[in-house]
Length: 422
Image 1 (tube, rainbow, N blue to C red):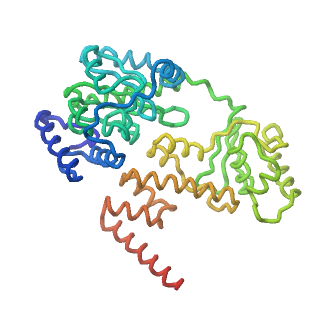
Image 2 (cartoon, helix red, strand yellow; image 1 turned 60 degrees about the horizontal axis):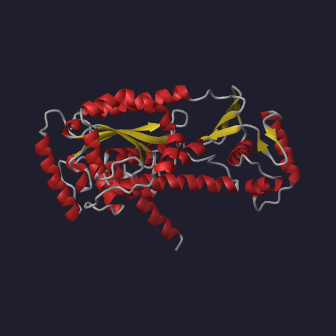
């Protein structure tokens, strides 16, 4: 199969493939082993579903939002702004083809389910309804839940669904992102019968998702450069601040200060800032005030306020972007935004803790995701070349000669380091 995200390659017999998948699903649920023709994306999803203790005998999704709560949540959700577009592009197709148009949030909760009335009634028996949680961790492998789990367009056919009751269905879904921040905000899905297993269905929802992102970009208010700034501090010792149409390259100390102030828009007192920068060092407040005076000359008095020290503009930092994407489960997007360790040469205690915490959270997410491509990108980056945990995980997934050789070298270095300390 040329595209692992497509359920059926051209010319495949849907009935025969469905029988093969049912046998493979029975084997997995009985013995935990995956056999052909199960695609890697489905096998990974089955394994995540099993780890989440999803039962293949599950009956229906839990409905988490109802009535007024659902209405209020939908009204405030950013995808509400593009529902007219979804209906225009997919509504007729769903109704005429006896399919369903569904839209979920980044947590896999269905917000809208529309389409053919008879199909909606059938889907309602398994709670494929607005307000129900169809996250992969709750309902196993399914297109909207898996799309937000892996942050990729995905098609799920018949017995590729983890829960047997869902296996009569076929669906295709694509994630939708905030065009400003890249944050995952939900997914758009088409659900129906075996006819949706065609490659065109996946391309269709992906095109609809991209159209929605373009529409959101047009609907978004313009950036007010006087009231917002962008800060790049990952993978560089001298942070870059874009503010008011100008780029400011900050010194190492000023980089530390601006990152800390960006993390604390409410401001920091002199004592708080001094502790974050120096902690146990005996540095006087005079030294800090002199540093802040120099920073004020660099930024301008209109940008740096005092009592407490704070920035007069909203700052979007690349650290925040990675954290936000991790929080939304958009691991691929988080890895893409991670340009390296935060201010790698900084010894400021608060920055060291933040640097380690961000790297540890992203590493843990990558290991949990077990995507060999993402792990390989991390392992071959300067910050990952000695990361034993990542190399071990990568070796288990992709045991090529270079990977195994590097793992042997890291293990040997670990043994050697242990001998030196005995």
